Every structure is written in structure tokens, then in C-alpha cells.
Image (cartoon, rainbow, N blue to C red):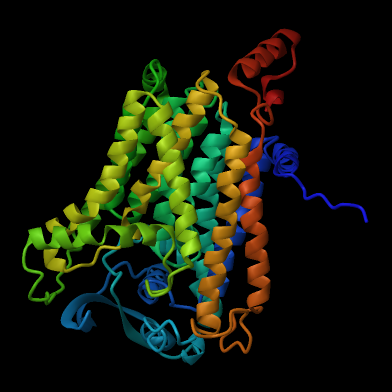
Length: 542
């Protein structure tokens, strides 16, 4: 009998490289492919997660439907809530909507925080009905995101409207993430940069991208801001500067117009970018007219966001636990929860009641650790220092934030920090890409890439399936979802298969060789010079 030989990983990597080279041949092709893959991932989360089964999604549904109808504000209504066994009064906003929206705040209550209970116990969502007053805890939030997400509620209602709202959110996030992918592919040594991007796009980021929740757009915008900022300052290219400025500006506008905290995250990316910038990158940037145009737009958006926040204060009356009685206690409590926040940024689903398998956390933590160690060892001193400062910021920001607002109680969640935290893997990928391209230590990047991103794809799929299983049969049900109690539209098999395919396709561009796709700046400049000399119009180059 002939001996069977397994396929060598090097052959697999070579095949992926050929496929990746085709995907990155042009910016347009890469953007469209990346957009389709990110949309499939976020869309699968949108379809496979029960409605209102993500943090505060019922409040965001109501806010989006109200803003789409021109209700940017409303009367303040004090609503009693019990959080962690403590009764408080939350200041919510009253809006006028069809009666079925009043059902949404109770939709998740029978199974949330009870992982063994599948989502089949939730009452069926109705449609239509007379207009009534409904309250939302998101009524103070900036209306820009909700005006976009709420558009489907104007043409349909019931579950169809809610799923379409999720789809619109997924489209926005997929577009931002696809632009970040194109930016990563423009590095001379693209594999480290694209690996950093894939590590930044955690299962939590993809999950929130498919929900009606401003955190999804905030995280995707943060990834684009960091990607464009680092590429512009670390790998300057005059022919790409306007494109990168546009991506930075668009990402910044989304980030700032979602929450005023986006100003802080944008400033953090700018400070780190300046710390690691390459000599000579700032002068041509400051001379570019597009920079000042985007600065005016971002400045105007910042003023508007701050004014909106100041004119919509929170009058909630929070009853704190007796032990939670000072900023120092709040900071200590948040610091003690640091590992939970990190796990939440990697993957923690539902109403923070659904954990993935340990495999997902281990793989993602190992990938981030590997990139960080390589950066500290191989990067310049200021590169290593910048990576350490970002890591310290990730650990220290929650205690500082909780101490500053301890009167609100222990409300911090890992997703709040993600627009800044995604900067760590993106910074590490940028530093390693630059060091590799500039003649740094030669590393087997094709093998390293395969070692990192292929397990990421499996960990991503594991997180999705484990979360879907929790809703279909509960954590005590069959491993293979036999005797399903709850099913998403189309069934669970379709969305699992789609997610598996998309998770594998997502990592393919990271295998692209450095010579594939858009030519380098020098070759582009030479080609344009020849075209000018020979006569064809310059537009023919693009």
C-alpha cells in the first residue's frame, strides 16, 4: 500500500500566498473582497444572535427608531432599575413609537445571565400598534449613528426592521474595516501589518459590528484611525498621503460623532503615532492642504460632540453598594477586574453572560503576546517604549475612569476601551513591518503569519459556534445543537458554515507576498514620469 504523506504547512502557505496575491492585486479588489468578508462575519453575528441579546441593544433599537423619525430628544423619565441587587433610578428619554417597541426591554430577560437557558423562552416580537411613549437609556447619546441605523424602521417594522438595522450597522463597520485592510496591505512588508490588523479584529469587535450598538462602529473606526495614522507617520508615501488622510478623517469623524470619549481615543492614536514617526514624515504632511481641510472637519465635529454631551447631562440617581464608597475603592475594584476587561475585548458575548471557549482567549492572548515581544526585542527603543505605554494605558485607563466617575458605580466594560486597545497589535504590526522592510532582522514571516493567523481563524469560529450553541440549546445542551430549542432565521447550520468560510477567507490576504499588488512609490513615480513623457493621460495610471 502506498504511503500517504500529509500536506506540508509550507505547501499550504504557498497556496495561500498565490490566492492572496490575486486578492491584493488592486486596492479596489482588496477592498471589495475584504468588505464582503467582514460583512459576512458581522452579518452572521447579526442573524445568529437573538434580538436584544447584546448589551443594551433594546435601548439602541428604540433610540435609532426615534431619531430616524426626527425625535432627537424627549422628556426625561425616571425609571427604576435593579443592578447587582441595588435599586436605582435611571434618567431615560421618552419617545413616541409604535407600541411593539415597548416590548423590547423585556425581550431578553428570561434567558440573559442564565447561560443554561436557551433563547426560545423569549416572547415573539410583534409589529404595528398605536403610538405610545417608550423610554430609552440611550436618549442622551449623539444622534448621528442612530439616524443612520434607524432608517429601516421607516419602511418596515417588527423583527424585519430590527434585523435590517443590524445589517446597516454591519455595513458601516465592514466598510471601515475593509479600508483598514487596504491600508495594511500598502506597507512594503505587508505580512506583519496585516497580522496586526487581524489580531485587532477580535471576535468581540465582529460581534458588536453586527449589533445595533455604537460600540461596533466605534471599534471599527478606531482600527481605521490607528491603521491610517501609523501608515502615514511610520511609512510615509507622498502618492498615498491623500488617501491615508481621507481614511484617517473618515475614521475620526465616525469615532468622534459616536461618543465624546472618541476624542480621547483619537488623541491617543495621534500621540503614539508621533512617538514612533519616521524622520521626515511630518514636514510633507503639514504642507498638504488636505490635512487642514480634514482638521477643520474633525474640529467642527469635536465641538459639536462636546456641546451635545454638555447639553444632555445624566440625572440618574445611582444607589451604590456600601463598600463602593470612594474613588480609591473604585480604582482598586477596576484594577482587580483587568483580566475580565481583557477577556471582554477578545470575546465575551450576549449581556456579558456568554463566554467563549478558553481556546479563543488563549490563542488571541498568545498572538498579542508574540507581536508585543517581537516589537520589544526587534524594535527601536522608542518603538518598544511606545508599545509598553499603550499596554500600560490599557491596564490603567479603567481604574482611572472608574475613580473619576465612581458615583456611577462599577459600570466599566472592556468594549469601552477597545478603540484605544486595538492600537497595541496594530502598532506592533506596523513596527515589525517597518523593521522588516528597512533591513531589520530577517524573520520567516510566511511561517510566522501561518502560525498566528490560522489559529486565529479557528479561535474566531469557535467563539461564534460556542455563543450560537448557548442561544440554541443552552450551555447544558448538546455539543452539536441536537434538539434545538431556538433557531435563528435560516437555521444555525447556514450561519455556522458562512462564518467558517468567512473566518478562513479573512486571513488569506495576510499571506500575500510583498511584491504583489500595488507597485511601490518609486515604481509608481517612474511610471507616471514615463506616461507624461510618452503622452497618455495621467488618469490612465489609476
